[in-house]
Image (tube, rainbow, N blue to C red):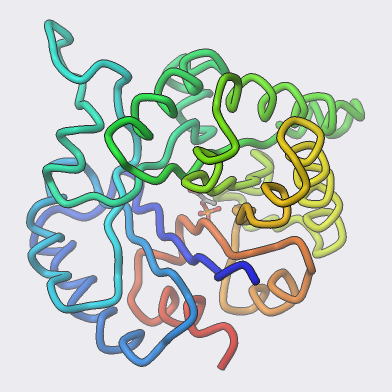
Amino acid sequence: MRKPVIAGNWKLFKKSSEAVDLVMGLAPLVKATAGVEIIVAPVFTVLTTVKQALAGSNIMLAAQDCFWEEEGAFTGEISPGMLADAGCSHVIIGHSERRQYFGETDATVNRKIKAALTAELSVLFCIGETLAERESEKTFEILRTQVTDGLAGLTKEQLGNIIVAYEPVWAIGTGKTATDEQAQEAHTFIRRLVAELFDHPTADAIRILYGGSVKPENIKGLMAQTDIDGALVGGASLKADSFAALVNFGK
Ligand code: PEP
C-alpha cells in the first residue's frame, strides 16, 4: 500500500504573515485526516516561521529547491543541510519552472537529489514534458531521459526517499489538467521504468504524484487511477479551503 501524498508548492507567494495565516487556517481543516502525507513548500525566508506555526500539526515542511554543495563560496545558494536545520523534511527538486527559467538540467537535478538525500531530506523529484514534446510524440522519450538521468547512481534503498511528481508542463498553472487516462498512462510508464532501472519492489513502493492544475473538482478522478499516489499542487495550495479539500479527497 502506498500512502498518498498531497503537497502544496507555494512558489513565489506568501510573505511571513500570509504564510502563517495560511497554515493556521489549514491545520484545523486537515488535523483529523489520517492516511495522507501533507506537505507545504513555502519560500526560503519563511521556512522557520512556518515550521513554528506547524508545531503539533500533521503537516510537513518542504523547500522548493536546494544547491548540491553543503557550504562554501556560492553566493545566493542554500544547502540541503541548511534546509534540514530550518525544519524541512522534504525538498522539491527539478520543478519545470526551475528547468525553464533557471537552467536546471537532468545533470544538476541529479547532483541536487544526491546532496538532499545525504542531508536526509526526502525529495519531490519533478519531471514532465512540454506541449511541443507531447505534440511531437516525444513524451515517453523525455520522461525516460529525465528519470534515467535524474536518478542515475542512486541505490534502491535511496529510492525509498524519493517521491516522483509527474507534471506535464502544459498543465502547470494553465487550468488545463491532463485527463485521468493521460496521467495514468504516464504514471504507468514511469513505474515500469523504475522497475527496469531498479527492481519491481522498488517500483511498487515508489509514490508518483500528478501535478498540473489539480483542483478540488478533478482530484477524485485522478486519485482513482491505480498509479496516481497523490498530487503536487500550485495554485490550489494557496488557499486553506481548496488545499484542505484536496487533502481530504477521500472524504
Ligand atoms: C506546480 O507548481 O507544481 C503546479 C502543479 O502548479 P498548478 O497546480 O498551479 O498547476
